[in-house]
Amino acid sequence: RRFTPEAFWQLHIATDGCDGEIVKFSSSEKWKAKEPAMELYNKVKEAGCATVTKAERKEKTEDTPLLYDLTTLQKEANTKHGFTAEQTLEIAQKLYEKKLITYPRTGSRYIPEDVFAEIPKLLAFIGTQPEWKDKVRAKAAPTRRSVDDGKVTDHHALLVTGEKPLFLSKEDGIIYHMIAGRMVEAFSEKCVKDVTAVTAECAGVEFTVKGSVIRQAGWRAVYGEENKDETTIPGWQEGDTLTLKATSITEGKTKPKPLHTEATLLSAMETVGKEIEDDALRQAMKDCGIGTPATRASIIETLFKRGYMERCKKSLVPTEKGLALNSVVKT
Image (tube, rainbow, N blue to C red):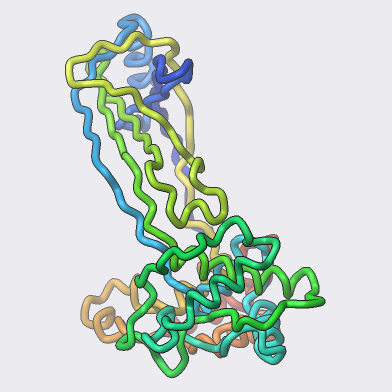
């Protein structure tokens, strides 16, 4: 409510890339006034070319995602499918009662060694299902990132059991296959990328661009993400001259911190002390959380039932009653 947006201006240049593609650079600086930005824009446009001042290339490895615990499943089901935390818990409980998945109210994303011994058989079972038949690599040894006896709490991470998922509703099927798909991801190979960052200078203005190309898709191939956000940068070297194909200036506005969704609220409940300014208090609350994986959904629903917040599309919006409570708590 108290946030006042501020305008800013940014410059952009474009040059030829690989295979007829255009590579777009953006200025490192953003200007709060239009006049100096326009003055530099005209100088850049008149210059017509930029000089590469830095070109960095490195290999980046992305570890496989960990298996789901309940909170992570709830967060991703909310982000990807719009499910509420309570809805996801209810579905997971239903799947558990049908013996299709392991105990759902878990706070662990790891499995112990004895359970890991069963993973090849479970992956082979997942591979017999139409949704996953081309995603599970036969005879490939599963990776071990999600295996750690010391990090398993009362219950291990969520797994499917090997019972056939017959006659599931659409919503139940979504949650079941999220868990199955995460298992395929978690036990796949790492994703390896070639990442490039290039800095160029034109008329005294610094411009940057970043790109990445996946060399080994690994776990990202499970959901067909191997080409997602892929930007190929030519093999430019320091000192190369780039002919500009286009120059532009854009106006933007600063944005307030976004409202919580159920996914981000669940994260905040897990790491409740993270944003506390007082160092001593933050350290004291470092390992605390609001609720447990089993109770967070009901806490959120209680806030709705008592009229402290309401849903506005995917966002959670505090009501006047909620804001009044916040004022009392803060004082």
